[in-house]
Amino acid sequence: MSRRARLGQHFLHDQEVIERSLAAISPRPGEAFVEIGPGRGALTLPLLARTGELDVIEIDRALAELLTARPGLRVHVADALTWPFESLVRDGNRLRVAGNLPYYLSTPLLFRLFEQAGCIEDMHFMLQREVVERMTARPGTAAYGRLGLMVRCHAEATALFEVPPEAFRPPPRVWSAFVRLRLLRTRPVSDAGGFRRMVTRAFTHRRKKIGNALRGVLDEEAIRACGIDPDRRPGTLSFDEFAKLAREAADPG
Ligand code: SAM
Image (cartoon, rainbow, N blue to C red; front, side, top):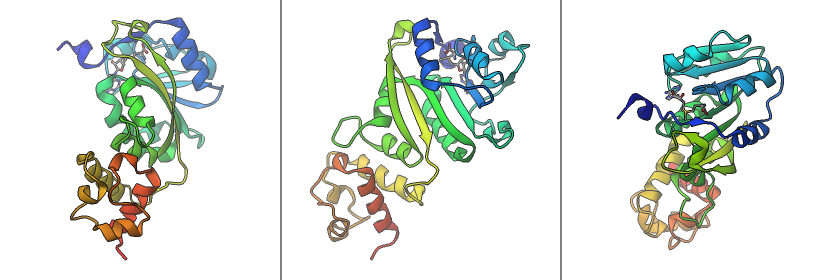
């Protein structure tokens, strides 16, 4: 695989999609903005024009060099996965993060950013459409599962619009979608690790009834004590119901 393919370099060139993305992000002067993977600058330059200052993190040195020497633009040649985002906070303003992310990076980066949620206000990302569907899926749908439930521990996710492959050069094989994530200031679950173990267990056996899927973790009586019928399938349980089950497993009785 070429370096370009490995780094997911599909550059946005459709002006209408660029305008829609900027309208959704709604950047304002003085906000602390960070763009991940600026590439050739399709979003970078209009973002910079609106905010006056911008930090960008680009792993590819040759692309980063194309962007340097613009007033207000700070280019960091680095891997966003290991970048300390707190270091970009100025005057106590939480960061607004944006990017058209390479698909290989999207889920691991999202969870790295959630770990640093205290310094982030919101995030707008272009991602593979299927990932956005899973992030925002409702119970009872095929896309509903672990990813959406884990995202919901940290953020409110809103799917904004879909983007066809032709909007990029070279075009990727799949459709993309633009998503907004507003970080929650109060976490809906206090033990994210216990919650993750619960949903991982439930969705490893997604076709089984929840009572069977959780065998060895919670018995049917304990599931009923949470107000949940053990005959239901994992994909029908709401976020709050999984949170109850996780609490029950952590602290039975
Ligand atoms: N934002 C540009 C656009 O919309 O045209 C480029 C988007 S392209 C899908 C992804 C960009 O992320 C590329 O410039 C690529 O080099 C960069 N990239 C890939 N992996 C990265 C990483 N781990 N950290 C930072 N940037 C990365």
